[in-house]
Length: 252
Image (cartoon, rainbow, N blue to C red; front, side, top):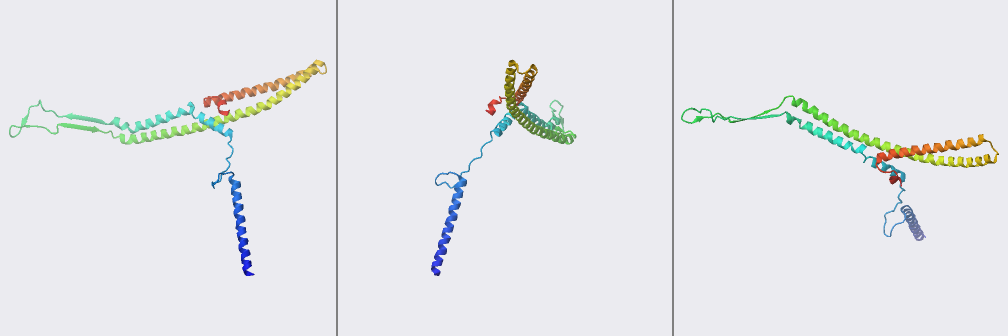
């Protein structure tokens, strides 16, 4: 009996482990999706790409290629050149002099014997260093370095301003588009109502006041639609001014 009980316990444990392994394999296949034979790496489904985000990043990239931003690069170069100039300014303050002691035409003087006496050295060199150079060069170099940093900060600020500007205008452009769609529905309803009122007016069932009122409502809503379209067109032109291409080439 004890031997049979041991066999039953072993068999139960084996079935339990087999069930756990099958469950883990099924879960891995469910998470990993389809995969080729022999490939144990799970394949995860890629999240859908937000097209509107791609459009916004494209607009920003195009704006940063425009002249409003690229003109900041020469400004940084100019500041770096001024820094190099400040570091080398001390060369302009140095004075180098040379002198040659020529006594060829002078009457030679003799000492003991017949050999003439020469004055040595025959070559003289001098270097003049202004004392104020050591006090002025350091602050000038530091000021030039700060100018470079300020120019770089200005470039970063310009990039942020352009990004915010182009994204703000693009959101306004989309908002005008939604408003125009809503206004189109209102104008269509007004036009249908005006057609019915005009027919009733011709039949003599309503007076001129009701016809004028319906016509006024239609004209007001149509003018609102035209103003919305004009505002969207202006925003579109401002965006195209920043990106340098037509907006349709980016959002298509």
